[in-house]
Length: 557
Ligand SMILES: [Fe+2]
Image (cartoon, rainbow, N blue to C red; front, side, top):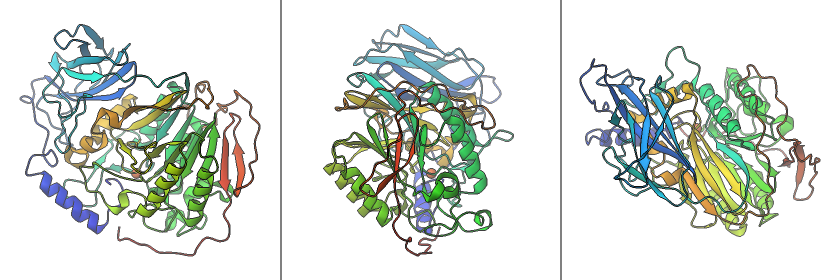
């Protein structure tokens, strides 16, 4: 995937993609169409997207640029404008108006609130008196603005149908995020392929991975998320300086294994070289600075947690030797732990998170072996899901896109790829748990700095990136599933966290509501290692015996 490691074979695939896309005007390698002559002072709106759709709210975003202009990224230069949405239940009578109170920004977000579940609404977004066209989808089916199937041409009105809420009482919510890539300075680079060189932050602004996670943490706190799961690629190359930065950001959000849990991605693997020399020797290769920062006392990279009755299993999907571009994999002892742990409580409502997806489907971009977990291991995991009907959600990162897939081998499980924190569409998915089901809703990071970076980074891969990353359907990023979760417990929203206070006085724990004492679980080779005041229990399986010796680099990245 862009932003990850590219083998020679991947380079050939990407080059073929670029060559095939350019001549037929599919967007890459061509500048965006201009709406008028340069220098008119006029504003042109673009990139309308229906990002978030819940049972009572729709969040729309778009961009305004200086008409006829073109900046170094091949897009219109940003130009502030007003923002409003006219909407209603009759497409011929859009009798309601929602406006942004901001006229000083080119990055627009308007919320339609008070929606009625089950109703279909029609809307048109406007800036400077002009209707806003949607983000163009030419490589894939679907659209960015409507729950209707197929393309959404023109400037609307567009339609969406509001989902019903998950049945029953709301219990608590959880943030699902991944791919922060702290330390990365170029987004969307695919080797040295012409036209796919990637995008950098604007001069003088803070590093984009930090801008993005800061906003995600603030948004998550405002939404009252009970805790946060980060599914790998926390850093760009697992350097100590970047791991320290990441750790400080997470610590400002809350307390490890109470407010946040994370797992390793391929970018976080042990590396060779001078920056890593002082870190512990890696299990598979090099020196493991990720483990030094996030896995104290020789903890393994996988984790089991129980919160408010919900079991959460975190997988280390690069628990293997390699240079990062090949398929993900679990070690034999991690796989054994996974089987034992998931089988130990088959009906327990369970969420699994880990970096590499089990499947990747419906991609307009080349899909390689490195896009997913090892196929045989993925099949084994799906088999265990089928045997353990309590599992209902698998959250993956790595692809940097929003995509919901069904797992034919485990019909009760939703497989949700979540877009990266660090780049367009840049944000997180909020899992809202109710007694009778759950909702998944993607939220773009909302700070001004984040919005500016999102509009820069959408130009990746010759401006085709949104067609891959946003999700081809509204339901790839917004979903409601009915199922019996009545055995779970309600939890109050977490109190405000000191997400912006620099630098890092560690805030008070958010979880003091139930005072659950630490619990030591025995059997199955499990031992409790942490127990947060909020009643969370992190479990680990102690490694048995020395790790297999290996130093194999298995690809040519
Ligand atoms: Fe990544």
